[in-house]
Length: 120
Figure 1 (cartoon, rainbow, N blue to C red):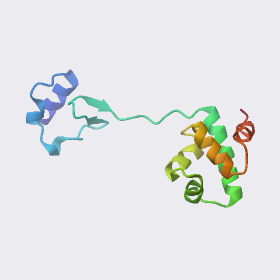
Figure 2: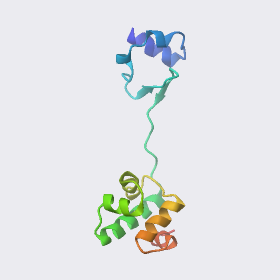
Figure 3: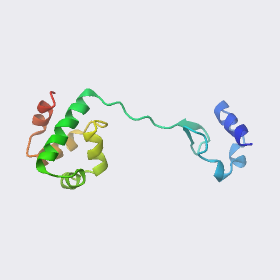
Figure 4: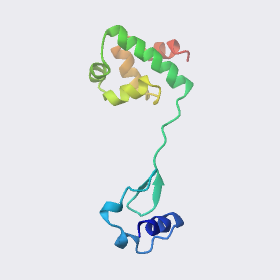
């Protein structure tokens, strides 16, 4: 029955599927998750790392280490989450203008100075 449900979902047939789905069946399709609409969706891919994000990540990490702060302590001082700071330092995210200004202010630099150091 489980395979029949999955086949119906992938074929786009949603007739009476929710009446046949048991809670234990949800989330059992490898690489897919079931949305409330009954349409399977692929898991999100990691964002591509851009050259600018990677260059800025290196600069941010060096300056944070120069201050002797952990990511968590730095994030608290800046007012951002430690996960966001970690993603910035891995080059997975590009900071918003407000985040870049807050980070630069905490590093006693200007936002333009950070970008120039990163080569942009």
